[in-house]
Image (cartoon, rainbow, N blue to C red; front, side, top):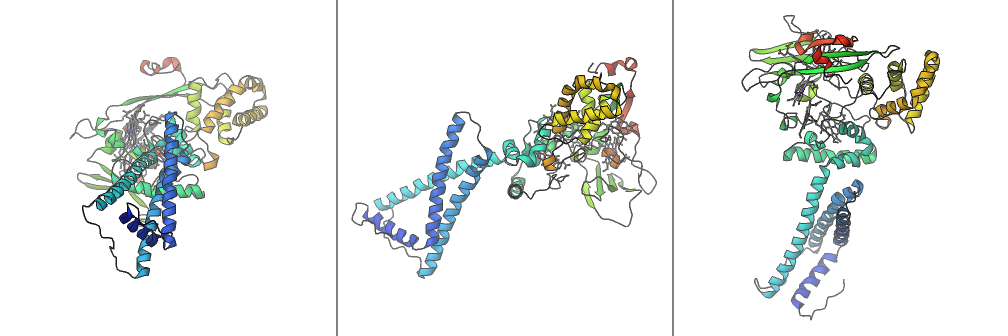
Length: 496
Ligand code: HEC
Ligand code: HEC
Ligand code: HEC
Ligand code: HEC
Ligand code: HEC
């Protein structure tokens, strides 16, 4: 490069500086690195101004832009500096010179102070920039906004379900990462991989579940829920609509023994017996989804009891072992996908669907199972219902037409919050393990609790993991259609 003027008042510094400059720019690696770093710093500055203006005006910022700003630009600057370092190293080797400190500056002299101040100032600027951007980036990648918007198609189904759930105000990271630096690092590393998978379109559809790398529930759920606090029973009242011509209303009520550990030291009862610190249930599943459970080991103070499924081969020990925790029952605490039966029962009970239209409960279920969401889902549902009625219930076609628009509109809402063709999510892709009812609202053999509590996991004495209905709940009424004859404590909680 050009020679710097030598006879200025800063001539000592000028000498020193131009010596450096010549040294650094004698090689293209250094030049490239410093260009990268300078461009990065300039862009960061511009982006920071833009971001502040947006924030000041209360405008919503685009997560893709933010991702570039807060992650890629600082990375570019760092990369630039590293490249300069590499260039310097290469240059030193090339010149085969021992590291020489040619400039004689007196330590403590004015020359020294000037230089120290310059270096200090630059370091401070860099620190503030990287510090604040790093901090922003840290928070940004932890935000629900980041999870949902950056990977919109991929995370959309989980986000839609999440927003309607009791945990809608709990940030994704509270369950998916939790406190502590080691999980943070793990999550960010796997997060980088995921971002590339999204950019390359190589992620799996649907996203496989269970999430095998999910942080143990003890570290996440229990930061808000104390298992010791659960106790007593819960009255569950469900209003059903039967699939007959009249859409007959019926009621089921069970008193669920939620249980728990009433006081430290006392033995937990009911369903949360499972999380008593003194109990441990381990199981071995032979499928990815942990639905086929071959073997269960219950640890008790007296030793271990081993139950084997009647279909399992005692010689075959393949599969994944896992200690049961919250997630083995509450696998859907927030990404709650419905079953058609539950969604329809709730829609009738809430007055969104008109029980006065003959056969609506039954035909609506068929429509939900067979129609796919598209640009105009209500129209697709209306067309399906019209042709179903024309074929099977022509005498009720007029009654249907009178309420068809409203019914199709609401059925479309149900469909679109559960079925996501882009991610290949259909009914039953993500079943809940709390309970034992299937898509059609009927008992599901081997589903939920019945994966183990099926009367056919047996120990060597012939004792089985019980399917005794009363172990988990007392059934007050089941599908009772005589609504007048219901016990008072049940009718008191009915919505109509
Ligand atoms: C209350 C805790 C909780 C919160 C909050 C939460 N999740 Fe999850 N999430 C889970 C659990 C538990 C699973 C694992 C289910 C399983 O393994 O069967 C899961 C699974 C997932 C899966 C895998 C697919 C699936 O449905 O099983 C994705 C994707 C996901 N979560 C994304 C998110 C996003 C995005 C957010 C924030 C909008 C979020 N989660 C918030 C608990 C949570
Ligand atoms: C950051 C705090 C927080 C974390 C972490 C958390 N929850 Fe919750 N959870 C809540 C709050 C608050 C509610 C009550 C919401 C309400 O009643 O509206 C709740 C409600 C629940 C309910 C009752 C839901 C219902 O239908 O009423 C269950 C079950 C539950 N959580 C399970 C879990 C599980 C399992 C995890 C771990 C995967 C978890 N929670 C993690 C805060 C949390
Ligand atoms: C053996 C299965 C099982 C395990 C394990 C389990 N739960 Fe539950 N839990 C249930 C059932 C069943 C209910 C009642 C039905 C419901 O609310 O969905 C329930 C209810 C709850 C509720 C609502 C409490 C209330 O009084 O309504 C919370 C909160 C909860 N569980 C959190 C947890 C946490 C946290 C863990 C892990 C420490 C855990 N559960 C482990 C099955 C389980
Ligand atoms: C991985 C297997 C497994 C799953 C899944 C499972 N359990 Fe259990 N459960 C056991 C074992 C083993 C025992 C102890 C043996 C027994 O008492 O029959 C047990 C015992 C119980 C008990 C009796 C507690 C007592 O006081 O003796 C209740 C209640 C219970 N489970 C409820 C549930 C509920 C509700 C679910 C579903 C939400 C469920 N369990 C899912 C394995 C399982
Ligand atoms: C291992 C525990 C367990 C056993 C055994 C069990 N259940 Fe349940 N049952 C549950 C849980 C948990 C729920 C609540 C699920 C929910 O919130 O949807 C439930 C819910 C129900 C409901 C209400 C469901 C609805 O949506 O209307 C009925 C009815 C029912 N059980 C009947 C039975 C009968 C009959 C038996 C005996 C053959 C039985 N259960 C055995 C755990 C059990």
